[in-house]
Amino acid sequence: MGRSRYKFHEEHYPYFVTSTVLEELPLFTKPALAQIMLDQFEFLQRERNVTLYAFVLMSNHFHLVVEGEDLSNKLRLAKSYTARQILEVMERHGHSRWLNKLKKYKRSYKRGRTYQVWQEGLHPKQLKSVRMVNQKIGYIHANPVKSGYVDMETDWRYSSAKNYAGEEGLIQVSLFSG
Image 1 (tube, helix red, strand yellow):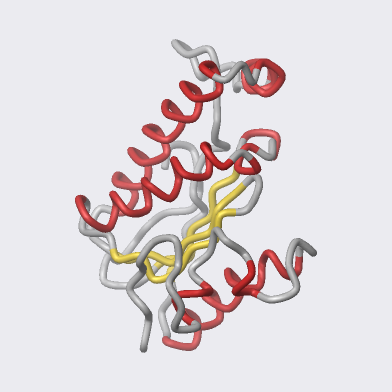
Image 2 (cartoon, rainbow, N blue to C red):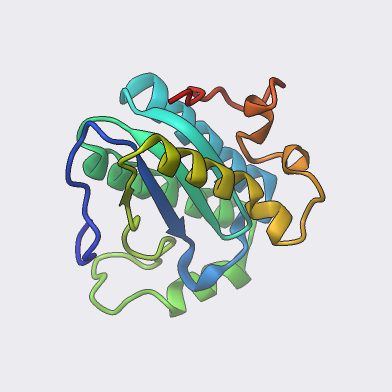
């Protein structure tokens, strides 16, 4: 993805990816902005043939375990689309403080736009074994607990932890069985 040294290499492996909001602004504390991301995760599965094994959406970043062809391009387009949607909602609802920060901290080489929502890259990590996939899924689900937001992984609304516990999550994922 652009200037990043991290790359997607072999498409037949799952990848752990992370993306963070510029300056780590807590945009996803707003349910409308979190919903944009959930809708995009569903779209990637349904329309872009991306297999989503696990996700967590935190206040200022997300982690995914995904697999599919041309992931770099598909996820780049997803970030671009969600950025436009996020900015539209923020403008409509008058989130001027956050908009001003996204404008102020936009990288100077990002010409032709007023704001920047996402930090560059996805930092993909290829998962070459069942053990690695399971470790990353565990990490993803533990993220809100380690951050002190909830006591149990399944209490975090914006995660696939409920899916793995046999409960209904906010969106469907493909359960990794190794």
